[in-house]
Length: 302
Image (tube, rainbow, N blue to C red):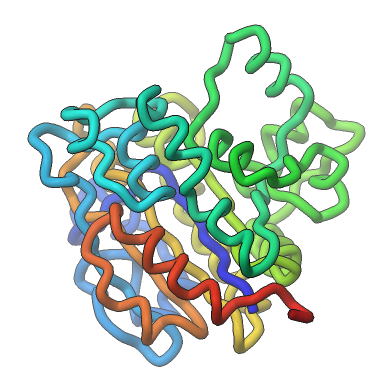
């Protein structure tokens, strides 16, 4: 019995517009679940799934940001109120200890193991050591939980996922080892590796990069990848498994706007817990709701 938490950086939930990629690009797999594309019009309960629109502003003035949003999402606190601001990019230093010890991965320990599905190559860790990169909220959470960080060998063997879903970036960096895959296969790999754990976290920030215009990948390509990823996961969920998809703030849904948005973010729940995870109203209450389900998702064999 497993929970798969897919964190998609920077996607808000709103109506179809001339700019919203989720209203412009077909999503056959998502549409099978919620009767249409990932839009606020589809909020509701469905036979296999539930889509909710949850608050990402944290009741704090200004535009929500990644540092406080992700800390709130992974820990279950209102990080913006805790530090009296929205903080961009990386988690507030004052909350690092809490992020290490109280995140949704570390809280799985009484019930079994947790996993972080993303693959990291040696170049990433070298950049961390030389301070060319800083630790993200997810990396801090993973370190605090003591999870094994997966590498390019895991990725090559289908035991990890690349942050861009289809391995394109890792293929460019390691062409002799990593081959590109389709998004559906990535979803399948995630669903299968998650079966050994109480909760598995996967993160993609491709959406936020595209939303900020930092890559040449098209918005249509990104939506297609997300749809395929979800399709691959759902096709390989066991009846006892749950998929949860959410985000930290809006951005990608309004690429014509500069900066983030105050739109709610999606909470898509598919599988065993779609009837029980229905009272979540904010990104700050996602983690506690998932942790409350851990006793029912004990590690296989327990």
